[in-house]
Image 1 (cartoon, rainbow, N blue to C red):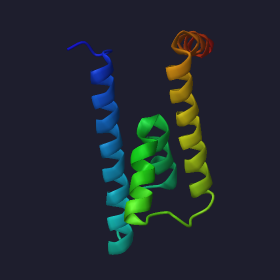
Image 2 (cartoon, one colour; image 1 turned 135 degrees about the horizontal axis):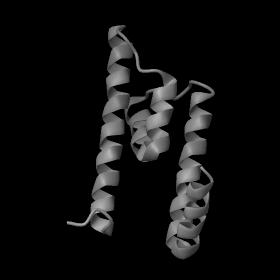
Image 3 (cartoon, rainbow, N blue to C red; image 1 turned 90 degrees about the vertical axis):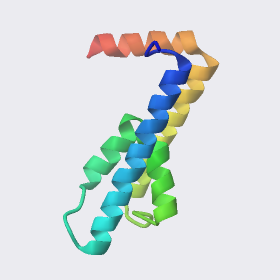
Length: 107
């Protein structure tokens, strides 16, 4: 199976979000047990690389980091960026690919 097929990308996206959910669960368990915790920076980082839906699902289902600011706000910004990116990909895929190429070329 080719790596860039829509089904493969969807499965990878789903797997990433399940992994992120598990990372948040692990941190919640550590908070309950009073053991070593995962940094907020890491939690937001895994959400940013594509796991924002898993992060929000874990936050709501596990009641984890629901009152912590600025964590909540930063996670919602990440979700908003991902939503805008997905909408632009669906509505204007060629334009989105060109924009990504320009951004990647600037790095």
